[in-house]
Length: 441
Length: 131
Image (cartoon, rainbow over all chains, first blue to last red; front, side, top):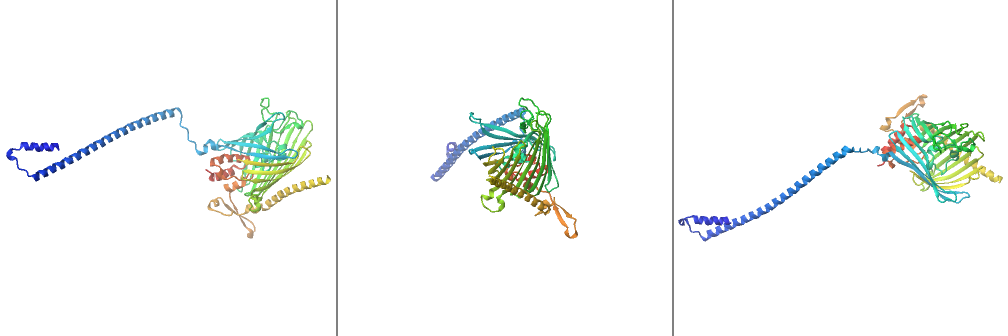
């Protein structure tokens, strides 16, 4: 505006007097309005320019900030790259494990636990932690398995010794190597294939809380040695024969003598109490089992087996201990099963000569769901019974009749109850009522 | 005293006889029905199982020819045969496929079943496993 006024004044001064024209008032007012409008426009332009300058300044500041951040990010990336290079040089990147090879899936804990209430004739009833028996499995590849089982029990201390003792016993520990489709090598503290009860009937797998008398008394459950086992299919209908051949240290003598009462079925593990690695006697025992399995259709099958073991037992090696077992198991539908074993054993002794022992058991179970009564409790109930007979060859004969039931809370949580009627020349064998809750896992 | 002994003996004999009768009766009926059960044709023959089926005709008198269909047992059937012999059946969804691989190796050794059958059972378990 100032410039325009100055221009107007300059023109007025520059023009000669004669050039001065008379300007009407209307013209002057029009000129004044024009100047005012121009002045207003200039003012607006100036304000707009100021705003633009301010915005530009903000943009410049923001741009500077972004440039600083970019620089920082570049520095951080450079540092990280240097660190990763350094780490890679010192430690190789760990392999990301595939699902199958993770150690968590290769390692499993199975097993069972049993809790009882027992009422033995002539004794006070008692609750009992009958057993906690974990089984550890570790698969070291497609064909290699290490498996070990333990039994944990608790027992009162002797009179005048307060408290109780926990016993943690290794029941088996073996390494299995599947060499091919027909031969598996097993070494270690083996579950022996004398009959099938020891391998497949113990713990929660047994529908009656007690083990059969003859199995406990006449044959060893485990032995330290090596075994070859396998099965050969017979056709495509599921039939097969299976075999086991093994060598173990064998039974020993508890006191080193050959007296009949010194026979120790399970105490010869290769490491003596004085720390010497040695078999208690000169020769290991050998044994074998041959089995035949025929399924007629699912839940209908028959298994027969014959097995035996023989070897020295006394330290002097003068006497042999031998045992033979015939086993059978039958399933007729999903609701009925029967199984049994006949066991004979013979061993020579210094004091009583040849000891002949024999025993057998026959066990059957029927699930009441087979009656199709559609009653809630009945459908989960199974009735079981067993007959045991044992002649120990030392003058004691025992018969036991067991009648009981199994209630299936689930397929792995079993509530068992039975009453055992004893008839024995051993007066310590008395009737017993047992309730048991067992869990298989 | 003599009478009670006689009664005990009677109870013992009866108990043993009942158990023995169950077993013998079961064996007899199993053997009696065995051939019919083995020779029975499968209920449904789908395209998958038909690949493993083989059909043979028994030569007999002209009016009594029988067609016997042989087929391999599937993993599911082998599972039903073996996996409840010792314990109640476990559901495949209880474990992952990798866990079943470890457990089946243990079961194969314990039950001493053919490796070929164990592999089919494992395949069935893994195909139906949980997680």
